[in-house]
Amino acid sequence: MKINEFIDFVIDLMNEIYDEFFINLSAKDFFLTSGCYEIAKIVQHYYPTSIIMIHKNNDNCAIAYDNQVYTANGIVNKDDYKKASLEDISYLETYFNPDVEVYNQKSVSENIIYEIAKCNILKIEK
Image 1: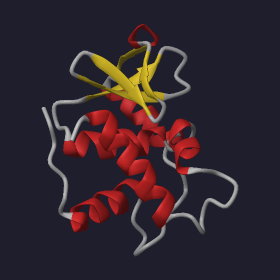
Image 2 (image 1 turned 60 degrees about the horizontal axis):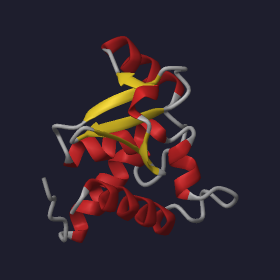
Image 3 (image 1 turned 90 degrees about the vertical axis):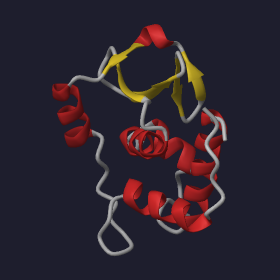
Image 4 (image 1 turned 135 degrees about the horizontal axis):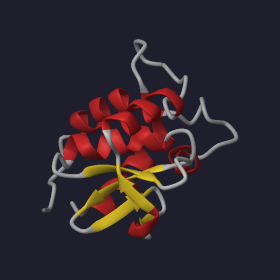
């Protein structure tokens, strides 16, 4: 599965799983705002050579893979992002870690990774 298809798959899965929690917010909107770090962690779990990126304004994060940078919107301008340092990751964990814990007190990313594993259909294309 290509990374952009995987991101769309995660968004669709998130809409199914969390529909009762995000009444006025779609999964895509969540992943484009406070949940950007959550989708980056999910993608990096399945694409371990991907790199978490942070916007130069520190207001969003994305994932770099195969010389492209992706958000929930798809490919974005890579010049607007830089590789996240350890300090940046700490910042993301503090400010982009939404207080959404459901299903046994796990984070959104942990729950989505678990749900994807249950699907048993993923073939990652590199």
